[in-house]
Image (cartoon, rainbow, N blue to C red; front, side, top):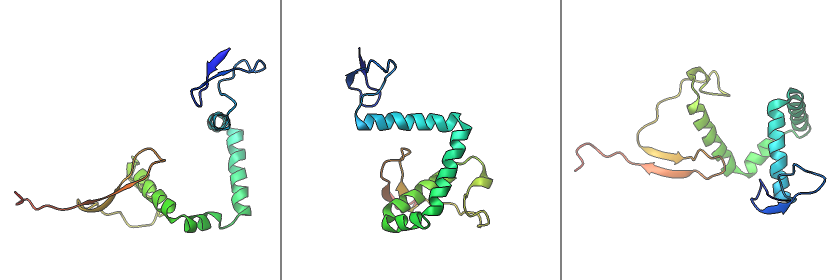
Length: 141
């Protein structure tokens, strides 16, 4: 029986041994299937979630300095992550949780209505756009 793949949208014939098969055998579709399974497993299975957390901690302990070196080699990605984190911090509902890492830092100042800003889309895998806003006096015609 032919069905539509949930990964790519192409039609394929289900394997007779897998009556509920929803993804074709292409590598990228199987990756999507596995990613969705892992996401659901992290939400629904506390033991799996704990195991993944411990596994990540063990990996980080065995590879000290990896993320620091990665940020040094990819400064554009590190800067983008900083910008996105600032946006996430601003969107938090509680003022007391405005900052994540610097709990003892002074209060943040308000943003000036002109200067250089980054327009960052809400979808994570897009580039930020740098814009300049200029102040125009009220007497401008």
